[in-house]
Length: 333
Image (cartoon, rainbow, N blue to C red; front, side, top):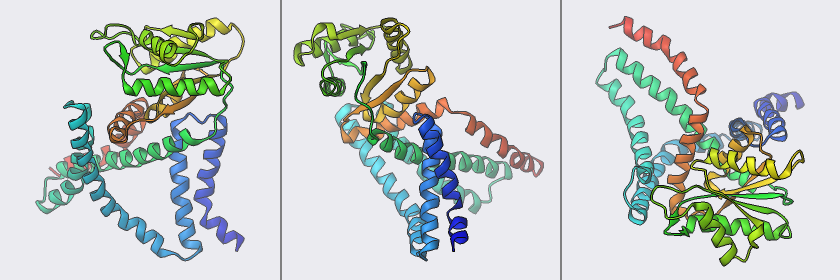
């Protein structure tokens, strides 16, 4: 019996071991998301076999087509809401573009088979299917792990609280940025107002003041944070620059001493920020502020694209595996 259970749950145990091992070593890694999703899937599969619940697998299989249709409808509806509230732009159209890609991927294959498309076209369709399957899996993995990472307990004794900029409305923080600043104040007060807050954000070409200056003014004048508890970092234009420049400030202030930081950003942006912090050797926890629900899909799609861009090698590996099929198709022309 024990041997049978071990055999049934062996894949789940393997990925569970990998997840726990890597999470304990460093929770801010993309591979943790993949291990965690595989752990969940194989654990559910094991439960369905152990307790003879074939309907669990059937529900999972049935959820694929129905879930796909529901997802497409949701993405299209969300695109309409975002464009109506935020205006028309390429980034605001991302949910709709993703919905279009899903429809084309689901319909394109059967259509090509039905019309008996040339082998090379079918080979290209296979490449799209292979890459698309990886995208679907990793998107789900990142979504699930991002949710988990934000909810896992984190230490509260921070020496620094870094707040990432997010655009201004005139000389005032936008609601998105104000939410980040409010979260930073919440952390600061929870830690007995001991930490130093670093307002990190440069000045765009269309901005009257730097984001750092506007953030500092908000913290001091509207939230009552002492002026000497806030430091401006006003040269950053990207997430990585936010982290590198803030780290330079913290390193200079702390000397050879160790310190711990919290990096405050919007909830959809937490995991990527934490992963970047890990890459540059910054000991920091990612802490998220709330984002309007209607804006979440658009924002998270952008996050996924950025994370995938930082982890491009799997796409190359898939392409290499596809090349033999392409060669066979070419010989059949």
